[in-house]
Image (cartoon, rainbow, N blue to C red; front, side):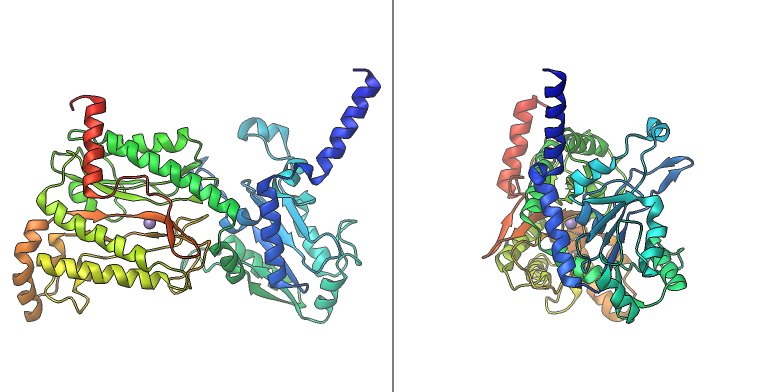
Amino acid sequence: MSRLARRAAAALLLLLAASPVFASDFSDDLAARRQRLMQRFGADTMVVLLSAPARVYSNDVDYEYHQDSNLYYLTGMTQEDTILVLMPGNATRRELLFIKDRNPEREHWTGRLLSRDDARERTGIATVLSSGSFEAFLDGILGQRGYSATIDEKEAATFFAALGEGRARIAVPMDTGAPGAPPTRTQAFVQQLRDRYVGYTAIDATPALKALRMVKTPYELTQLTKATDISAEAQMAGMRAAAPGVFEYQVKAAIEAVHRSRGAVSWAYPSIVGSGPNATVLHYPEDDRQMQAGDLLLVDAAANYGYQASDITRTYPVSGTFSAVQRDIYKIVLDAQEQAIKVAKPGATLTTIHNRTVAVLKDGLLKLGLITDATGPQYSMWYTHGTSHFIGLDVHDVGSRNDELKPGMTFTIEPGLYIRQSVLDNLPKTPANLELIAKLQAAVTKYDNIGVRVEDSFVMDTTGVRNLSSAVPKRIADIEAYMRGRSAASGAR
Ligand SMILES: [Mn+2]
């Protein structure tokens, strides 16, 4: 190629790079999310989102960085020191992204940072500025002067007018933070605004973000489906790894090896692998018990793929066959999930689903003699958590239990029963309780230390739910068949 031809080709490439031809499905989706958010707020509002801070693991080592979910939702940026500003009332530049400056010396130690072009391509935001200029930008905007040539008086005329008339709003996702803890980054930001500027009201952006995030976009559903496929495959690898004599951490390793080897960022939450009595600890954090023949193993583990968190739990016998007492408890829990799936329809709520599981669990517990009264709250000795939560960017994603379920929402259905002698032991010794304990003791002894949870990840369609994690065996016969196949495939264990 001649020098001239090369130059022409380079110029053409530049032109193409600047055009939206190369916009990805992801950046298109991000742009649409921002557009919907701006419509909710209108022209008098400026929306500001800050990235999550890095967190120290120990000394000079940080935890793996995880982006703030709202900022990720609108930008796809996984870098710290990132700020998004949306000004829906602006003439043309309604979206501004502030990112860390590149720094070759630092990058030699801690990895390559995105260039402004990279950030443009990733986010679909045309105006990318240095995070170091954010303070000057705020000063210029809230002082109604504008900021350099980027945002002049004409560009921001609508917002400046709103500021001048005292009706401007600055929307920030307000977080409450932990009681007594130092202010969060967002709280400090809001305080800084209050100290320095007037003419606006600070409002909470959380409800608008929640409303958008609750209904997943087709792009998000594709990512969550992939996260769940990986998680399902990992759960089955865990089933194949489990056997008497094997340690819980070996099952965990088999599961997480699948997550990482299939391109998941990480687990969606720390994997719970609890055998025998550990199955009754809801968020069992350790993994060092050696499994015994006859144990049940409860595995609550799933992957985070593309910042979408799946969530699956299975409970199965390490020897491959459920005992009679394990079967009694397992059947009730599985029945509760299956009945709950039937009431999970558009218009229902997570409370509808929870109430259905409670009704089924109560019936079952009464039959086994683990409660004496199915009309009251006795069941809550053995069922100690809610049945469902929304999933998405966070494993416990935005959304409340009384929000009406709509197509595109994603959530779990996960009843469980956890039989522990300590529950009876810790009841206040009132005459009524002593009488109850006397009635329940035989059944509690029979089922002591059995913990069962069954959980799948679902998406709401137009008529009911679709189970994204149905590939993992769940019915007793299917689990036992899968476990038998495992022994045949890997030889006698
Ligand atoms: Mn869950």
